Amino acid sequence: MAVLPVFTDSSLFARSLQYPYNYTPTEYVTIIFLVLFSVSLALHTGQAIYFRMWWAIPTMIFSGLLEVMGWSARFWSSQSPSLLSPYEMQLTCTILAPTPLLAGNFIILGSIIQQLGPKYSRISPWWYTIIFCSFVRLLPVTWRVHFKQPMACSTSN
Image 1 (cartoon, helix red, strand yellow):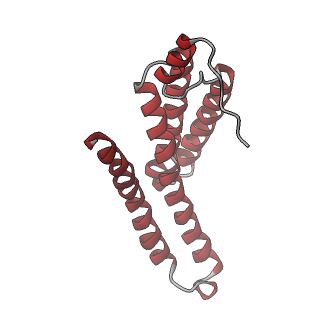
Image 2: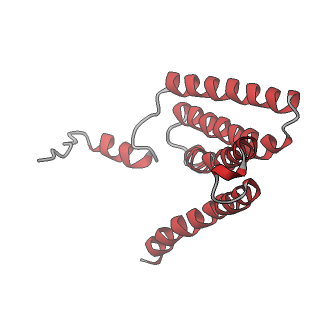
């Protein structure tokens, strides 16, 4: 059986309702992830330029930028936990960031199939890229529709 928290101080209860997270994000954890994603972004950018993989810029590099922006916003939230803007920025960026990375993975899959030979695949490598990148482009649209629908219902009451 779940135990509900008992607030003995009414100001503590009021403060917990004001924060979007209902807690304060840990500062050192956000710094660790911010550094890790920044290093990953720098390495992927260097690899994309050095090996002339220009397809990595709108996929992997963009995904890394979204992650760095999301974790920067979470760090901002650890400094000012009552602000709504960094919470929304963190939520949006970290939810959307894996989408372009997934597109990059499907491009890599297409090149692997091309090197191994199309006989090991049901469809050609080009069609893998077209089909899966199209689905990846549709994911943010479905997320927007999904997240707007509950908000529209809650604002009408």
